[in-house]
Image (cartoon, rainbow, N blue to C red; front, side, top):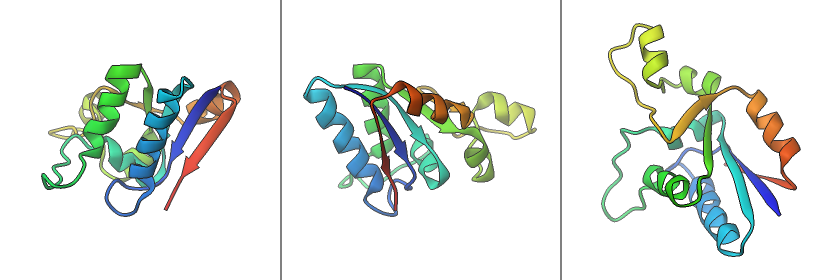
Length: 130
């Protein structure tokens, strides 16, 4: 089966991000295909490259990046939600005159249309939220 994940929860505010990452690993281990993860609302904080959790906690940003590296899963971040929360990639930082950026590959800023497309391409779109 082809799956998509919609993640609405911030990485360390509740269990949504950790549960979504564990779900993603489990479905890939069972031979299913994960087309993409779409980060929306506070879920965009999962793409913050400057996250530095304590060493005794899972590093969820790195976990998503590893999932991409090992399985080619697209990591799509809603651009409108990200900009509202101060998360910009290098291109958007330059466009808005900001000195730095906080989102980088493999995370990609995209529009909500990508979420609609993901829902149409997949057999299941599973939502994780607070």
